[in-house]
Length: 343
Ligand SMILES: [Zn+2]
Image 1 (cartoon, rainbow, N blue to C red):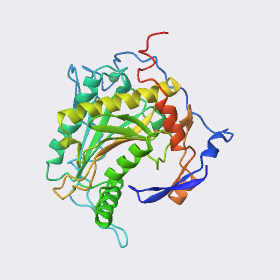
Image 2 (image 1 turned 120 degrees about the vertical axis):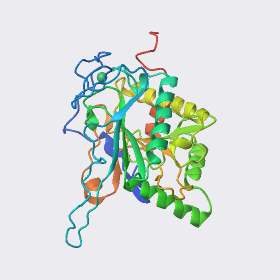
Image 3 (image 1 turned 135 degrees about the vertical axis):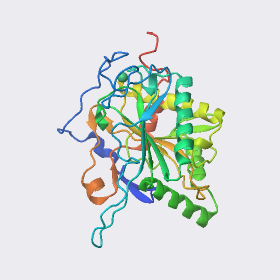
Image 4 (image 1 turned 90 degrees about the horizontal axis):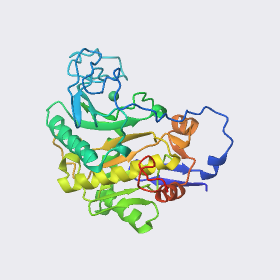
């Protein structure tokens, strides 16, 4: 397989060269993630009752626990004045709020091993944080994401995500917003609605669908095992979802993360951003909220390195066929391998 596929949300071509997956690999590999994780660690800064580096002590929390990041990338303490550099350079003040969201008190859990109601509590917390932070005048966008696994640089397995509520918007979502507006203007149709329709018609890349939510490997996937999870109703922010939609989203997240862990029978790493519109009061009805799963591994222990094509040329070269990766995920059970009863 050797072709280019149009990524309509990024408005760029993805080069699919699936035959490269089998090439000999003598490069670096990452170790199999350990599953020998205790339920509580006295030295974990996210576990209940433990002290963090700034001296704050976590409460004895039972569900989702959100706190201000002790080492934020942006913060309300940003200096007011920034030095103006000479042309063509520019600078501006980076301001906002950064928070950490523990999904659960148990150190050894992952989303894949949480119950659907527990995941629904996480979704509800995303909703609340987006509403709360998005309503603040300084905040232009609420970026919520989870980095999971050593392969993406996260050494602490305690299940948690992060929130950056910033006085600026993020380029990926700017690009997606412009693409969706342009598509609306040119076709009078919804781009994301058409993506969902195309995935339903093809059918073989769909992993999950219920009354409110669909999950699929997109036709234009850049990463192996990349998955989109999205409400079928178009809303610009997670905060606009109903309780029923949140529950469906939780079921879909459970389904996808369990398939991921079952794939190689080991905890599966990913970067998982929520794609949301800005929160500055503008008209964002063309923006369709969704969640993306971007996995760094293309095979067990083998990282998809970004190199000449991606870093150098700026286009993605995918070593895998989205249809093949979807077929692998679709064939897996939706009961987690550590919870399955022995045959
Ligand atoms: Zn912990």
